[in-house]
Amino acid sequence: MTQSTGSIRFILNDREIALSAVQPTATLLDFLRLERRLTGTKEGCAEGDCGACTVLVGRLAGDGLVYESVNACIRFTGSLNATHVVTVEHLAAKDGTLHPVQQAMVDYHGSQCGFCTPGFVMSLYGLWLSNDNPGRAGIEKALQGNLCRCTGYEPIVKAAEAVAQARPDAVFDPIVKVRREITAKLKAIHSADTIRLSDGETSMIVPGTAADLAELLAEYPTATIVAGSTDVGLWVTKQMRELNPVIFINGLEDLQSVGETADGITIGAGVSYTAAFDLISARYPAFGQMLDRLGGQQVRNMGTIGGNIANGSPIGDTPPPLIALGASITLRSKAGQRTVPLEDYFIDYGRQDRKPGEFVESVFVPNLPEDDHFAVYKISKRRDEDISALCGAFRIALDSAGLVTSARIAFGGMAGTPKRAAAVEAALIGKLWSEETVNLAQAAFEQDYQPLSDWRATAAYRMLTAKNLLLRFFLETSGEKAELVRFEVTA
Image 1 (cartoon, helix red, strand yellow):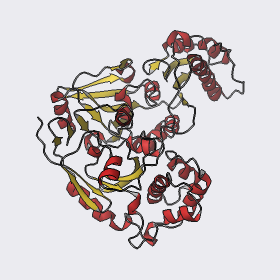
Image 2 (spheres, helix red, strand yellow):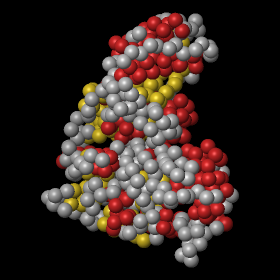
Image 3 (cartoon, helix red, strand yellow):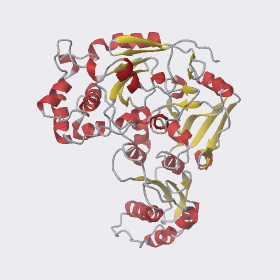
């Protein structure tokens, strides 16, 4: 039996919490509603899609404190050490005066049945704290992860636009007034010591350092590693899986670094999509545009690029562009480190080149040469916050005569793993970058992929779309105005 050492300590609104007994798969939503009776936070989808359960979680970032909207339904309580959890109950003043965000929702009729309203309020509150002048695009981005079935979004957006004029230093605000105090408390709570909690049957562990994580995986090679829980959370809420032991790594500073060199960028496995967004967008704009469509804001605040890679999903959105860019990953264990090209990490469906005791430590993305053409296309039924039917990434280099000198094309959703289109690449290299070359290369897709039919798309649709995306890439990089070729698909 693992001996319990330490406790999960965090601040909930204005109260300090210390939990010495926590089930590995206990969710923040259940803790709030069932144990603390904070029922303003609602359960809707229980899979991180609807946003009714949105709360803010403040975490230390350098010397400051960053508040982010998260889905409480798939956030595990064990991941909250040294954080500040803020629920909708904390916004209004003690005399009942509504917070400006809440009052704007009233004034602009932003609620009908009201079930989704607390989640919208918390997402808008997070935006209000972080952005003085978000504009309509910024507001819509902040609300990507919040769904409303009866009010409609226009009144909610108008409320957000109106409240942007009322700033924290001019009004009551439960966070702005005590931000320094909360920061100091979280620094006092934060520790590099490993926390182990066990009841004799289940156990959860929060390592203090990456070295501790390597030691723990040598001891528990089959443990479930949880970073953002945007996928693992659904194993629990939808598949009812029992996970034991669970190791939470979202607080590991060793995995939170983002570095730039003359050769490229290195992203720690614990860096969230949100934290990596600015750098990725600056270096690889097409990749950044795709990240804006990966889940809602809450998912991007929680989910990590390292987790998206480690999970090995054939429809993970980040591996295709990373493979096209020539990325590599560093794997770490108690025995040391090794680096492998990302495209070689994916072996087969559900199988990755990760030995027992290893974990993904970081991903290195080389610079994109100035003259290379690069694009990423995500195809989904809904533009925002939807799973991909397929995701394609294209990168080519041309010489002065317009001949293709190199090509890297990768797809997710077309095979059991994220996979390069080697035959298509070979059909392009050495040829003139022309519509005729592209038309001939399209036939090579059948050599590279045998896609499946599922509820997201049929095999025929996937193959047709992949071919058309190559043509789209050509049209966008050549400046021609030719129409997309229409392929006939038979049932």
